[in-house]
Image 1 (cartoon, rainbow, N blue to C red):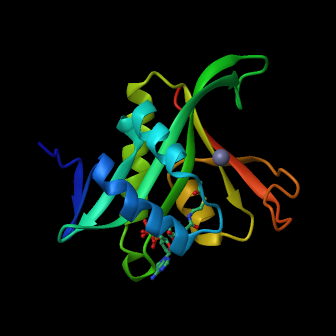
Image 2 (cartoon, rainbow, N blue to C red; image 1 turned 180 degrees about the vertical axis):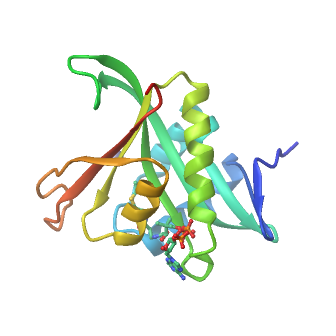
Length: 166
Ligand code: ACO
Ligand code: ZN
């Protein structure tokens, strides 16, 4: 049975299933220059289904967010070693943007990583990606670092993170 996590207009959010991976990969190919192997999508779905969410309109997947968990140094606590959520990729098809779907996708992924006892969540985003940076800031993410030439084409990233413990 599919559980609807949230609804925004005629768009529902639910956990991703194996059968959604092809449309998810197609959306990724259309919207972002960073692509991944089939195996990588499957492994994220297996590892963290709580934070692999799709947005669907009339039975068609139009957006996704996928995450993983990692153990590492905290982005907030000096010398702290923590379990962190990592937003690997999020996208909404262009014709469905600006309606709040990206915001609810990130919100649901935050809930998902909290279920896995993560103390914080982080992501990288292109410095030029104003819409995405603003969306993350509105949700409470802060820009903490600027990894130089993070992307293959040489663009810098912003490393943004949110602390669940403060
Ligand atoms: N198109 C795009 N942005 C718009 C539009 C529109 N038609 N209209 C308004 N916006 C602005 C607004 O500022 C809006 O914020 P508001 O709520 O204050 O008005 C904001 O963009 C978009 O917020 P949402 O509607 O919640 O998000 P959306 O569903 O448009 O999805 C996303 C945002 C996922 C970043 C989308 O733009 C996208 O898929 N972009 C291409 C892929 C991408 O860049 N992904 C992020 C890469 S970083 C990473 O994956 C970790
Ligand atoms: Zn990343």
